[in-house]
Structures are given as structure tokens and as C-alpha cells.
Image 1: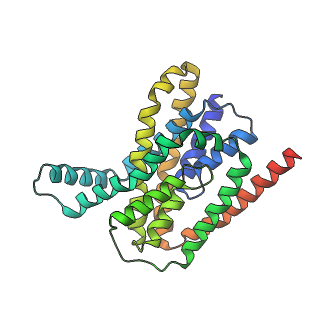
Image 2 (image 1 turned 180 degrees about the vertical axis):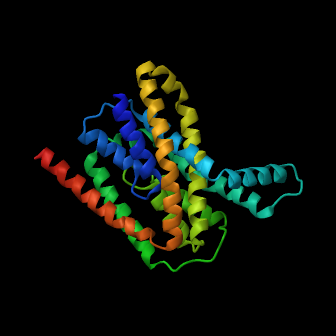
Image 3 (image 1 turned 90 degrees about the vertical axis):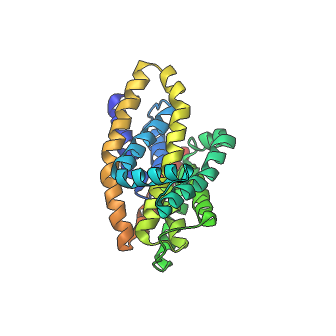
Length: 267
């Protein structure tokens, strides 16, 4: 993969990771249609890491508050109860995706090579987003362990290319009647443990990939970070405005177009 291709995929990742249109689906289709020789899952993981850094920068104050509260809770000292509670709920919500990563990683990797499946799942994402149009605005600022686990299950489903992580988790949070900005915040923060964990597990593979692949991965990661920051800001405004469902039109259009192209190529 060339440096230019790495930049293109990195920007694509950064823009689509948090806009609810499935970054992994777009990366899989781009690599398939443009015959890009990607370094593989390691590249996918590290460009996701670039977007995780964007989340850390954007929510840095909130993350610091939660980490401090959890640490004080663990030490049995005075702490902000709601912040500590949020940290614990994020840990609960991480469990489903962690289990999927351990037990079905190879099956998920094969899904990236199936453009028909990716296209179909993009259409499914559109349906999920459209349903949020009919969910009344909630007023809750927090969720319990059961709700956190449900949102975590939605995130686990998003390991499939074509299912949007932000789309699935925010839709689940809205369905649980979380207030819109709280739903988006929880979804963004929930992505961090999984992405950072997957990155840590892939460091060895990245070092073994060689200098050329390593350079492309580094450039792609930087491009993902730079494009993810504005995408987060846009989505926060969109969710708060109650127009989250409109991304369904894009998912349907992209999924149907990709499916048509795939069928034409196979004919």
C-alpha cells in the first residue's frame, strides 16, 4: 500500500468512525474496489487507534474526571459518585466486545473479504438509524448495568464491517431513553477500551510488518486522527439536534450502490 493510499484510507476512517456509516465497512469496500493492498488487520486497528486518540483529546476533561473518580472509589476515598458510576458502567459495557474479540476474531476477519455481506450490513445500519426517528427524546443522564451491557452488545455487533459502531451504540443508548448528548458521550467513551485494547494486542504484529508497512500505518493513523476530531464535533451536534436518523439515507445509498457494483463485477 502506498503512502497516498494510506492517507486516503486514514481520512476515510477518521470521517466514518464516528459518523454512523461504518468505518470498517467503508475501508473493506475501498480496499476491494480499488485493489488496495492493505497491511491487513494491523492497519485497521491502528487507524482505529488514531480515532481513539481523537476521542481522548475531545473528551479529555471528562475522561480525567471519570478516571479520578474511579481511582478514588477504588481507594475508598471521597469521590464524585456519578463519575465513578459512569466509569464502572463503561467497564460493564466493554465486556461483550472483549468476548467477541477473543472468541470469534478469525470469523470477523474473513467478513472483511466479502463485499456483498458488507454492503448488506450497511443497509442494516441504515434501518437501525431510521428507527431512532421514532424514539422519543429521553431525559436520563445515566444507565444501569443492564443498559450498559445492552449498549455493549450493540458495540460487539459492530465488529462486523458494515455495522456502524457509533450508529449501533448511540441507537441503543437512545432506545434506553438516555438524553441525547449523554447517549453520544457514552458511546464515544465506550469505544476507547476496546480500541486501545485491540491496538495493544497488535503492536507486535505492527513491529514485525517491516518499515514500509509501518510507515503507511503511521501516516494512516495520523490522517485518521486529524479527520476524526471534526467528525466527533459534527456528530455531537447532530445527535443533540435529533437528526441522527438522517444518516440512514447515506447508508442505504452507499450499501445499494456497493451491492450493485459488486454484483456487476461478479456477472
